Image (cartoon, rainbow, N blue to C red; front, top):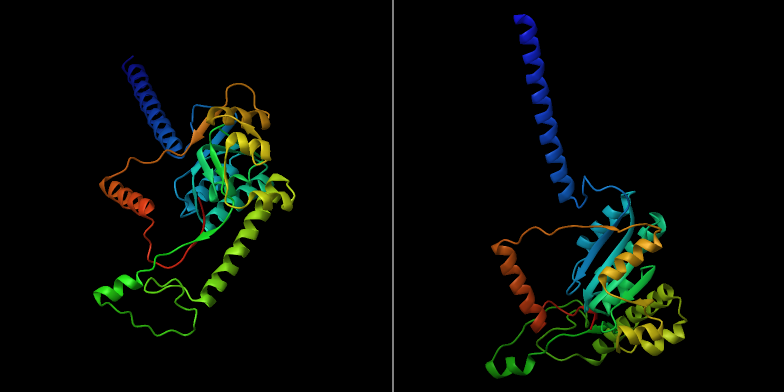
Length: 298
């Protein structure tokens, strides 16, 4: 009897250890999955969200998210939620091109949802989506390119500061803050601006299925409300973020209430807050002495 009792107790202890192990394993996996933006307990097809906020000065974050959602078979649609006045040309183009790739190679539905603003580079990104939804009061458009920098030559003369330079060519120090542009520099930068402008017009014409002649008429830097943009063919429909989620789910053929997933940002530390404050000051003043930058910026 004692042996049988010991066996039963041993089995109960072993079973308890197994249940405990499985419980903690599921907790660990669930925590890992949640950090990766995927809920372990939620099944079915999902709509992923990629946020594009503020000045666009890098593409790595958005492209990384797009790649991740594109590879997951249970992600049927992606909503790119844009609240941005635009930014640097290359990052805007890289995000735009990744959306095109996701649609073509991963066969995902991608809908652009415009928040308070999706102008210039923000609109450039939206043009890659299958459909664009804007709020009636969204500020969008601003199809154009700008390059700007500061000149402090006269101030430097007054306080007796001079800049010494040795350069390999006449145009090597274009945008130098100690003097005004020369005629040749202005001509060179104008050529760069117009080539980049043509790329923007082509992206809008291709993405929206518009004739380039019509796009040229709109591409003078003008901004439009969402309602105006709808009438001009720059967006497909009006609605907010939740409407865009349902719209994307319908396009993907999903039924029922869509399951929304997105990457949660880690809680900011003190250095993140300091960096954010410095970044906000820089955005507000736009004081950048690092040389001229070509921008899709409102």
